[in-house]
Image (cartoon, rainbow, N blue to C red):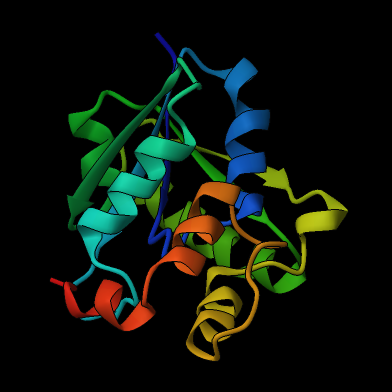
Length: 166
């Protein structure tokens, strides 16, 4: 069974992430969309909310499972018997960074291959970092995130959502 891991913070998940997973589905038997928990990194949304959103967004993707992990991505891949990492590339700086990480993962990970997918032009300008800034500024994120997330963000008081952060 060909298993791939698509790791990220997904803080929040964007339409670019959804597109990458959708395009990767035919390549693998299973794709694990995994939230990497890094206690040194500050996030806008709590882990539980990000996992809930991922479950909602990918509920109709039969090959997709949702998980989270702490520590090295390669170690998580080993525990899942995943031989592939899926990574998206929006631009040249993404490529330079991801190439370096991929080479390091090859050294410390057993038989782990990184599969790079180029972002579709309509998603190449979207990043979670930019979306977080729009959210903090109370802007409209509906062009950048799945509908279920933009609807929830519009329906709730953002301060209430963020105060439950773990």
